Length: 440
Image (cartoon, rainbow, N blue to C red; front, side, top):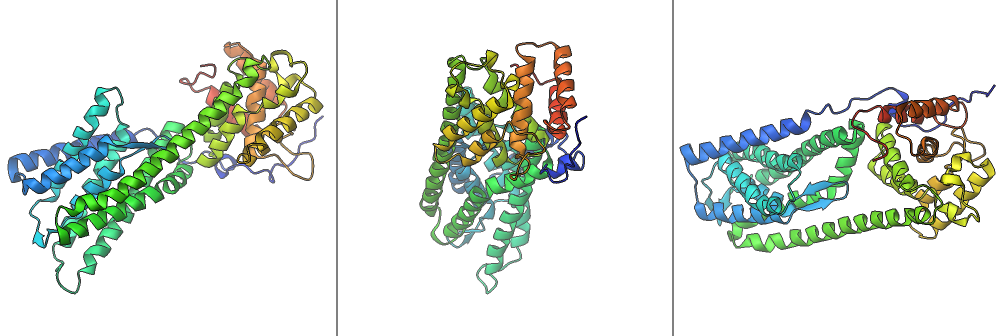
């Protein structure tokens, strides 16, 4: 009888130890889109029918900037859509209180209407070539401006901008930018938690980390643009848009490098398939399952990225074998052979000089989840790869549900020592979702 080992020392995400944490329930994205549509329709009707458009030249200038910014939108790592120039221009229009010393006459509702029209115009070229926007992200950007316009206009009205309390308006802008950024991060986290079926607390942390740099750059640029227009007029817009354009190019380059890196890793992972060492699609299926399990267990975005890389390259050590393992099923190899494959794979990955964390996950993938030496239990990513690799090896090319259940039962029987029970149950949860097909 296998001896049970206490698992208190094994690092598992807090949500996995203490039950399911609150998750998004699917209503956040439709609610945001609905609110954006209502604010757009209401602002357009009010401005067009009741109030009319004030200062057309100013309206056109900011509307064009918003449209150009939306046209030049970028996709950041993690599938996040951003339009820094459009957002900064829209915020500065909402923050506008004078132009060259002359008070502005437009209302908060006009700001919302102009920004909404600019966004639609900027998105049309993308839609025409088959690149629709992420509607949740687009709605968030519009609602950010709605909140800023409706808050700033009434609050700044009593302030004498030419008196000794001029700094109050500046402080108000900064507070509103930070507050809206925090609320927007929470909304984005709720959408992401629902899309990835992961824990809300984790996605909030991920979104705030991912958006803090670009969010602060956009907010600071918006404040500077509003203040520069106050002193220099509309001609200053082009001067202060240029630094933001450089920042956007830098973020675009970073996102392209990340995509190229992942594509390179995926290409390398296919070497074992082309060489006949593993079954076709094995690495991709293991990576896909591992990612879903990592989300289920509440892993952070950076941990999920390392897990994806490690899962794609977990079998690369098989290239050193003189005779391939039948079907590449390392779960059927001896423990000594498994360790040798893992060690060689880890050595190959370490040669890159930048994937040491991934190499460690690969090196320890064959260890029992309870650990077996001074190093202690293997990392969670290694334990996930061990389970997903065993599952795909044992299921093979079958799509029969009875076989899947039999394999899950076999893995559960070995959770006393070999496989992490939390990971096995997370695997079962993922596989039992109606929309998930592990062999796609």
